[in-house]
Length: 160
Image (tube, rainbow, N blue to C red; front, top):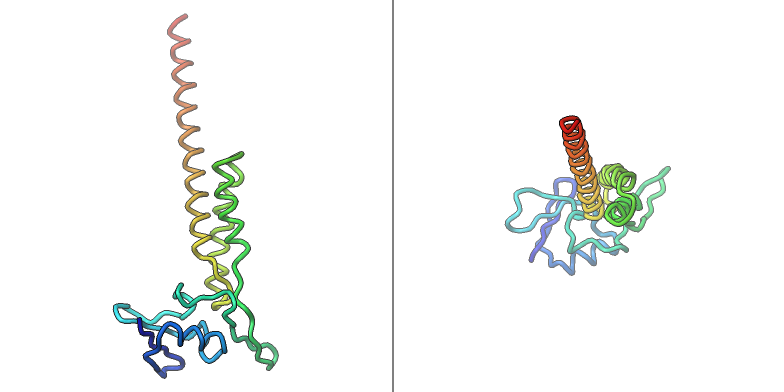
């Protein structure tokens, strides 16, 4: 599959997947540069292409006039969201489910704002799904318990 790359309105390519990975590794292109492949509706940041993202892919940052490369890291909040989502189905479900949702949304927000320095959106989404499922299970169980208590109360009142 061939990639086209755009930065500051200048397009280049086509490049093979291996060429783009090499260019990313040496900083010749950045994860924030836009990429396009045949069949895509719009140009997307290179960091959104899973087949190009590597944990060692550098990110160019400028701080106080000094330009440096930083490695891409996985969001700790995304990992926490997934772990809490899993725990919500194995142990005490209420608090881990809520925390999975909170950490999942926070992780997705920070990943989007990181300009390619953070990855792990899939982990955050999985944590969100598990967290929301845990909350739904709790709500359903509470509704069932309420109905059962109401039914028992009505039956007890009629039997007197």
